[in-house]
Image (cartoon, rainbow, N blue to C red):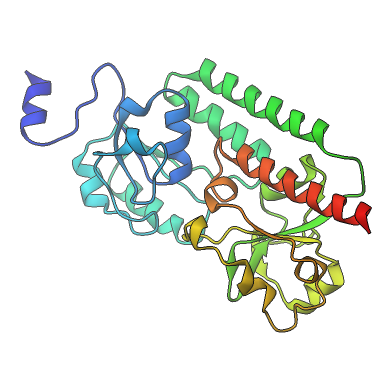
Length: 280
């Protein structure tokens, strides 16, 4: 009767488990990978994977503009928030002020992502599945590492935004992904999660490849020619040699299981650079 009365009022009903609300794509993807998609009662507007599973769920607004009143109306047992980008802290403050139970991961490394998967797994009574997921991610990354041709680390820049050019600094899991596949972020020593990269810095660092991963833009709309045509970038090896590849922000910018696909695509960039070097 209780479940029926909730359904009649239009409130989502989750039988046999907790009611979970996810406020970022990465958390949503972790929940689904742990087999707890049926526990979701609401997600942010940007959560899009797996599309068939998420269709029909209440949408709570963009990750930086969550409708906390709507969120509270769903009466979630646990809110999966985030502190990965500036502005998330305001959302977390509003969730806390609403008296909702929440966790807010703030990963900056691959080890942090593994930790957060385990933490969410524990909270969702899926600890064994979380551990299996972490081990599978490690196996796939090890396979990628073993398949990389030998050579010096390839300087690669992941580009979060084109104008101004925003790239990862030292506080990014991207650095671990690059290290695992034979690449290196030449700016990993910068004490920042991300920063504005000037053309002379890219030239001096000898950036050999650029991965376009523009936040909030679909991969089909990435335009390598925008990078090739930048003033002051002509002497950057990646621009000179046209080694500029689109890699969806869904694979590099979301701290969840699909970063392994991002690593796979970064490994392809490493191979391209090394093959070009051997061919000269």
